[in-house]
Length: 377
Image (cartoon, rainbow, N blue to C red; front, side, top):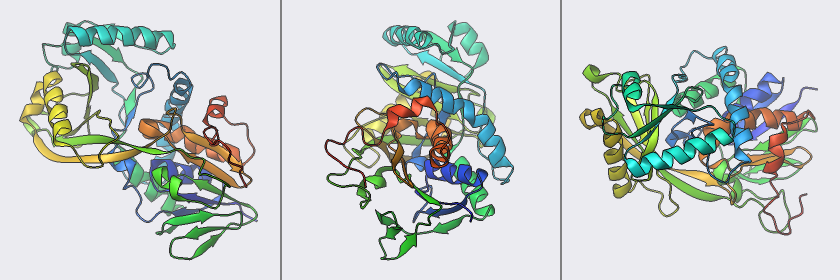
């Protein structure tokens, strides 16, 4: 009897998980009413374990590093099952400090990154502007990270979706209400039976906190929405490419990133807040002003859109990834690292489902670590 995986959630985590289960020989059912419409739609897409290093988040570093190493092979394998583009680029990242205080911030970050045994190379501003003439001559500090890559999340998610459907995955366009050992209950009242040879993966992002039936007591997943604004602009043909590398850094201590895409657009972001699900005018103003401060040519671009996405945060910013009972795996709470960690999350879900030894770094992601008195069933 063939093995069957039911994956709840059609963002990049769920879609990558579907793909990896197919690679392992499973039949796959995807359940999501509107795939690629959540956090994935609003993400930057930087595969940047070095640039994403945060102070006092040591347990995230091995997760990010391992997942980044998995991505080139994942991109290659997905490309064997779809002709759709992924937006995958490997030019690297430049980290910049806009003024003297930002330069000191960057110096301290470089030291911290090196202490984490990650590769980063300080550059002179002259050298940086030779590499990227579009950079402002006013920047005061630069470092290069050649190993940090990027993809276009919307494109890659569509490529994953196309790949899993082309390999025979069933897609149920409904929302999930409950999970029991026998079935997945849909909000329509229908039930998707869970076979004795099957596994369910709950990868529904923030929606996972609304799904019940698999635990006793209070909900063990302490998920919260963390909103981030994204701005997209189009570069006039005469100015292309505005930059080849991702430009990240600090302007008056505000984080900023500028991501060039293959289609001549640029994605700008880096805001993070927990108060409003809609694009905030002040945040969009700050993003555009700070992006122009580091890459002045952005002032000449065409404004396309401003959106705001809700990322699933946890109390310690680590994902929830692990087996919670036989046949049920939780894979959510990836916060602002969902795109980067998708490769590792998908691979780990298959390892957990098939009894293989999962990465040691996943041990810190126990889905019950924040549950006070919850008993899994």
